[in-house]
Amino acid sequence: DAGITQSPRHKVTETGTPVTLRCHQTENHRYMYWYRQDPGHGLRLIHYSYGVKDTDKGEVSDGYSVSRSKTEDFLLTLESATSSQTSVYFCAISDPGQAIYEQYFGPGTRLTVT
Amino acid sequence: KQEVTQIPAALSVPEGENLVLNCSFTDSAIYNLQWFRQDPGKGLTSLLLIQSSQREQTSGRLNASLDKSSGRSTLYIAASQPGDSATYLCAEYGQNFVFGPGTRLSVLP
Image (cartoon, rainbow over all chains, first blue to last red; front, side):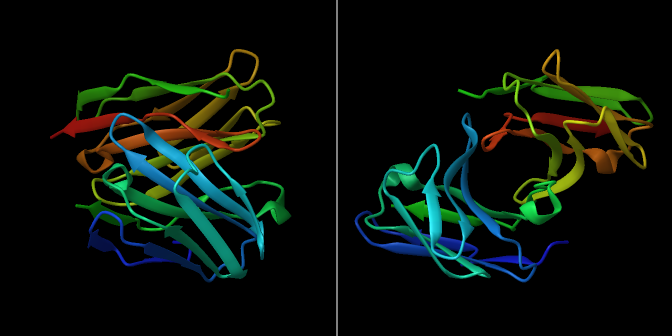
């Protein structure tokens, strides 16, 4: 298994509070991604990073921000959590250096906003 | 907009059957296609990746094919086992990764 960890694994928070999810990798892969998975919508890309301090928006980026100050860490922040952000969040990595772009996923974080 | 669909949405088969899962995509400039397995409450596990220049990839009882001209990929599972029960997702990589909704497979003992 690829060395990807996510923290916390479970979190319950109240509407309006800030929340930060962390993804940590030990593979030295250049690309990192944040997805959310919801019934009926499948996996949707929130933000991605193609290098330290280089990030871009995905399909569902509103209400989310990201930061990547080190190769191994990619943070996802919900500035003011809403009930619509209740979801399972997955981090993924890939490495374009092999020109294959195979993605590997972390175990996920289950977030509940009450 | 890139779209990926998977048929069927759910499938139940007796143990030992060979089966085919289907994935269709609209992106003509696909770079690669990847098949994943997801167990309930878990993350996605990569099964097979087919680059756009390839026609198929094999790993054990799994074989994945890619036909760019028709926008289709299939995942063939031979001699299915109850441990194969999971949701199978395909994802195409063009400009970005786009995932299908998945096929939920149940293999009955």
